[in-house]
Image (cartoon, rainbow, N blue to C red):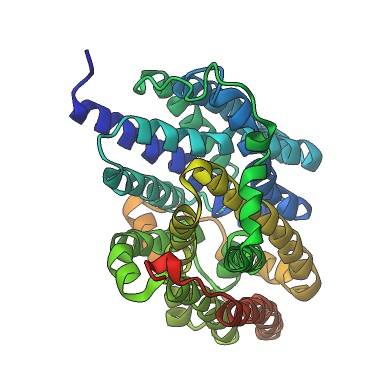
Length: 442
């Protein structure tokens, strides 16, 4: 006897909410937090733990989750292990043990990343119509927003408490996962095919010129994309934002809106223009950051944050739709895994490394400015309502004007680099990509 569909929908919605709450609790403000706690040297490596896990996750899913155990049980065990690793971070971070903190991030993300695919598998296996999936997935975005707002409202954007919050949420979802609808391993009893495990059948798609251009440009554009996730919270702090985590949640709010609009835009614009608009939005975002930095132009910075819906949805969601349409039915899951491997894995890993190296080289005035801002503000004791207002609170204490001008000019130079990268890649995609079949043409 199957449980009522309303019960299944509720459990799957809670799963999506908590799953992205875990990630959103620490990922957005990770750079600012590590920087403020004397661990700036591992910012690149810490962010790099996510793409490393994204590279390994498809192999894990192919070996274990698809063949041996029910998806919800594998998900539960992984989240419990990952939660323990994350809860251990504050203790080692407070001791300044950068090496152990970096290793704990890797352990956590190796456990967390496979749950993204597992969550999707559980959802698709237990809904009556695939068209219902966006209504479930949007709860993930809401969870990410909720995490950012809570972190900001509690004043934790630079506090080690963000890792405790993420670890606790991981343990809660780990326990809850065992109450999710039963989802048997889809390939249980089937012979292991190495071509499937290592996505070799999907790699044959690269023989198609249009798909090869799509993959190459997707990898390349993820390099400038990584700049946003790894350094924006640090940049906003230097620009006077009181709680960057809360402020950046505005981007996820816009993501909900544009996610719902994608079907209408897709019908009118098609794959190529959707992806180009997404790439163009990244160019515009970084340009707004660059030219808003010298005068700390608040409206430019907020508009840049709000562009996240177009930046993320038009590029990533459209990319997954195109990959699904372009691939033969027999290898669609492999192609999706391959796309995650190349974008969230290879592209983002290289991007985080480059972003970290360039920040160290180009924004030498940041550390002194950050220390001056912290010292100028001093300790504050704010009510919850006051913290709520800090989502839009931007203002610098009295700091040396020359120090601010130097750091702001350096930030401008820094942001022009990913803007130029994204513009060049968009130009390449415009010239080289053409696939009318993706839009139903011949």
